[in-house]
Image (cartoon, rainbow, N blue to C red; front, side, top):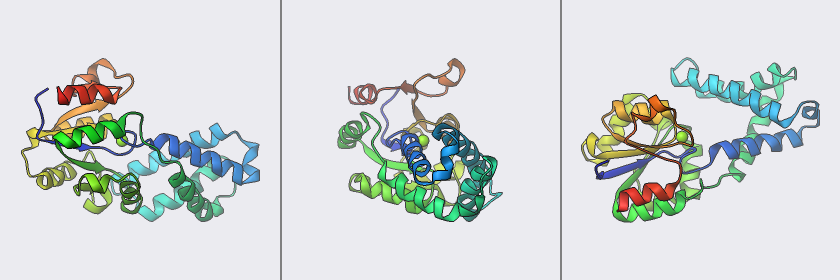
Length: 231
Ligand SMILES: [Mg+2]
């Protein structure tokens, strides 16, 4: 892998542990509403994740808007599990409050970001809602590291749409081939980045053989990424 001139980082499940926060917030929801005890926390988490993924796909392709996504992720989850879906608004608000309480760095990511940002220009490129992602940026001091923060809701398209990569490339002010993208998602980050002409470093526990060939670098430990880029 040749040394990049610029490094973009994905946020959710690359630098910050979104999945853990989501699970913990749903566990809090399960504790809060007595009637949910009829099912297990795992059942609630599994159903929510299934519904949420479907809705994000529809949102990404422009079939539904943000309000519908936010309403239906709890309404559909509850109804699919045989409960009254009309409490979706209160539950959604409570979920977001709890979700924000459970944000943490991915192990090793904070140190890696600190070390790499001393040597390289860096930025952040993430899918998600502007308000939520900006709260993460402030909470973890990412805005002190770079003011290049690209959020899909602000741009109007989501990764892997090439337009968001093009926008980020322009912001970085270097050639696409000089950018390295560090991300965890095969489709959004690695395929999306590769299609934009970026190099990619894939943060993944167990890559499958065929997929792995697309990324220039694969790692499951941030110390390895730092060692590779600072050697
Ligand atoms: Mg991610």
